[in-house]
Image (cartoon, rainbow, N blue to C red; front, side, top):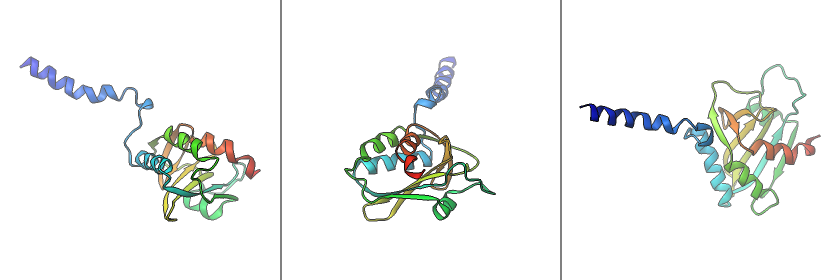
Length: 162
């Protein structure tokens, strides 16, 4: 009897033990799945156009900016008509693969966005960041970010928008 109890306890604790290093392992939330699909589609040359939106962090607003508001009220927009094989693709794929998201309960004040379109021009997904890049959204799901995607975005395009 005690042997079977030990086995049951070990079986119950095994998943918990695997989660102790959760910051190194990507989760399986729907938002993380979207990011993983985007990385795969970028790598498979299934993403054609990307649009990058920004409202500068120093711009004050009465209410927090949502992903939808950013796409309608942006100050800057940059379109890469075809990311495939271009100068930014390899580093974007690398940055996307490094990205880990965790769901949040509240939406951040969005200042940056990247909207991805398939080669057939259908919208695939949008990824949005606050001014520091630590919080934002995947589509309309509030998340926190770890990884290099915001670093790639800010490092490549913030000078274009100033």
